Image (cartoon, rainbow, N blue to C red; front, side):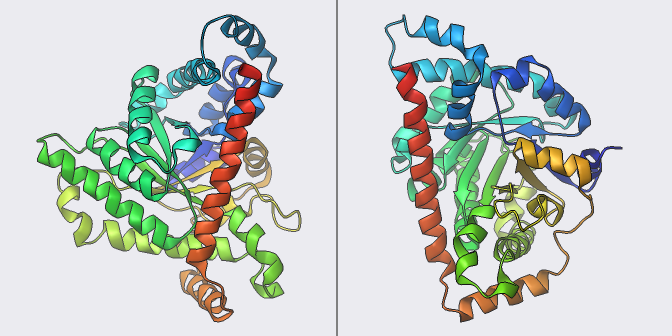
Length: 351
C-alpha cells in the first residue's frame, strides 16, 4: 500500500493542486490517481503557468486567436477542455466513492469576488459548459462569495470555497452552506450528494507571521489554527445546527488544507501534510510537495493530536496582540490580488 493509499484509509483525501494539458495527456494524472490521489484543484495562477510553459497549448492558442473571441472566451475554451479531460480521468474514482471523491475544481474569474450575482451566473455557466458530474466550482470566500455559495448549493452545484484563513471565516462558510441546503429543501429538492469544501490556506499564514514571532512560535500558527478549526468542524457538524440536514443524508462541508507547499526551507517539506491527516478532510498539494510526501512522508492520524497545545499556541498569539481575524482578512485580500494578477497575465497572450 502506497503512503497515499494509507492516508486514504485514515479518512483523508489527497488532491493534486495542479492542472495542465501535459499532465493529463501524458498519463501522469492517471498514474497519480492509481497511487491514491483523489482529485484535482486549479486556480488562475496554475493555468497561467500551464499556458506559458506547456507546448501542447500552442496550436489551440493559434487557432483561437483567429476567432472573433475575447481573451477570456479563449481562456475558457482552453480551461474547459482541460477540466473536462481531468474530470473524465477522475470519473472512476468519483463513481467508486459514491460521489465523495474524484472531484475537479475550476475557479470563477477572480475579478468577480465582490459581485455575488455575477459570481453565481458565471459559476452556473461554467458548470453547464464543463457538463461533468464531478466538477467543483471554486469561489473566493468574500462576503459576496458566501452569498454565492448559498445560491449554488441551492442549485445543487458542488462548491470549493477558497481563500479561507481563520476559524471565524470557516464558521461563516458552514452557515452559508446550511442556508443553501435549507433553500434547496424549501424547493422540495434532495440535499444528498452535494459536495462542498472549505479551503483553509496554511503556509501563507506562517510566512506572514514568522518574522514577528518569538522563535518557539514560528512555523506553528497555521497548524494550530487548522487543528482548532477541525475541532470547530467536529462540533458544528456533530451538533444541532447540522442535525436536521444530516438525517436527510446531506454531506458535511469538509475542511480542505490548501497552500500546503512549505515556503520556509528551514521547515520540513511535508510539514503541512504529515501534521494534518484526519478523517473527513482533504489536503490539496502541489507537485513538489506530493512527490516529497510519496518519497519520505509518514502517514499517521495526526490531526486530533495535541489539539490542546494548539489552543495554547493561539492563546499566546493573542497575548502578543496579534489579531488573527484582521490578519485573515488581509491575507484573503492579498490572495485575491495575486489571483487577479495571474488571471490578467494569462489573458494577455490570448488577446
